[in-house]
Length: 129
Image 1 (cartoon, rainbow, N blue to C red):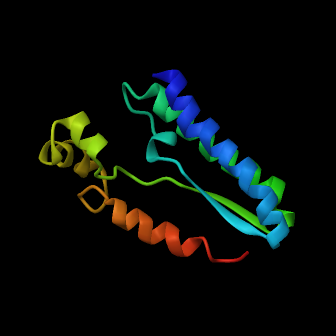
Image 2 (image 1 turned 90 degrees about the vertical axis):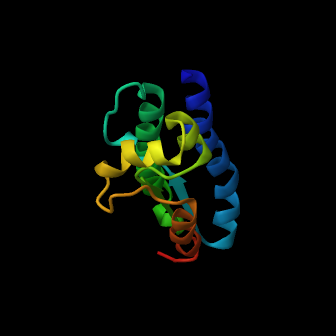
Image 3 (image 1 turned 60 degrees about the vertical axis):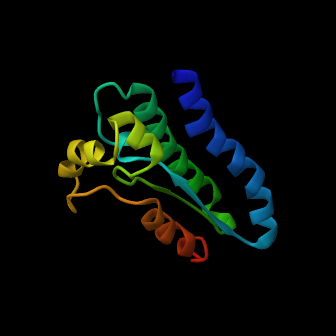
């Protein structure tokens, strides 16, 4: 659904950032990491709303990085490949089917995990510019 994808993937990130940036200014800087997707950079059939909103999130992150760099606020986007989640499992009818359909497109030959994504994002929030 287009409206839901726009509200969650783009508007949600903008609203959260808008609320966080004044606090980051007061603190002398901060880090915003928006979780985009490989589908924000690669087209995939049947994923127009998701892909378009993730592409917009990548671009929003770039603009915000330029707008807030002088304030010590760093803004980046992370574009992971497919991450094994319950949503992916439902979409493909199970873990095995998801791995079979999606893993060949990834250099490691498997889907990522939520834990791997967390281990990347969590330490990055403390790195100063």
